[in-house]
Image (cartoon, rainbow, N blue to C red; front, side, top):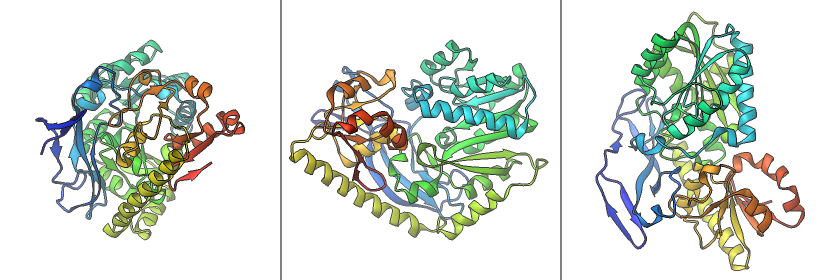
Length: 426
């Protein structure tokens, strides 16, 4: 199988080393059932320059499977990570809610585990160093591992030491050799990106001190289905985790899940703590969430097939609403240019015939075009000066903050369109 490429007026094929999954990433079995296809899709963070618009754009299948043995939800197709993460156009620090979130994570680590002053904290997929800045403010020693050189350079400029690399056993060995073992290894919104979960977890175990803790944050599959958050699905996110499959994975590497916290961030996530069994017994939250996943049918294929049906109904309802407003002469723009928004735009085929442009706070995206539908990305000052009739809230996970921020726009008659979980005009 090959990716397709799309250019104005034509499509063609080219060779790729993209892989197609035949076995589950966690249990290795072949009991994978495809339940949703979002069609050929471009890479969600591949924002294009004007010059790149003239070239064919690669598209990859976006098919989602369920493992009936361990319950892991996962993509069938694997895009080489070098195609997605060598240059990255998302900056954690560009979002005030995310800055506050990572300040809370740093404080939580210190309160729960009391690492000694100067203890090593390694952040895998450290982006611009926002979390490690907060950890260092607590007297901890931070080290980032970040494959995207452009955002790693931002972190270095902020005083956060960063290795430019994809994390693996070789990197773990280097860190232990040069810095010593880590009191905590953190991977926020990274673990879902990993194809070789066994190799990654083994490298984390090598890096951890005997009394260390591994902390991950991932979108929670329960929230994704309950809230119809299909736009969480894109090629970077290879896995969509529940607590049960994570527990099974970690147990194979001598770790146990000791606590799980549910978070509002990114539309509903879980923060998972894993330690060697000498740690305190797991909290009740772990068994309670596994029981909840079981009782609500997250181990049955029917649950996921119903989700797929609801996704298609949502698409039809949203496109119908937008076309109706456009037919009435309304001017509509997109608010936010997150990766999730590009899944929504491409699956629903919402392009320049409906939206004039999208705005975003990330400077790296300004002057570029969204993948697939090629909407221009402009700074938020354009939105404030332009005052369109409607704004499609692509960054709906920050809805509360955005609605407060744009109080003047709303007071002057501007309206937001919330696409998830049901299209609604606010």
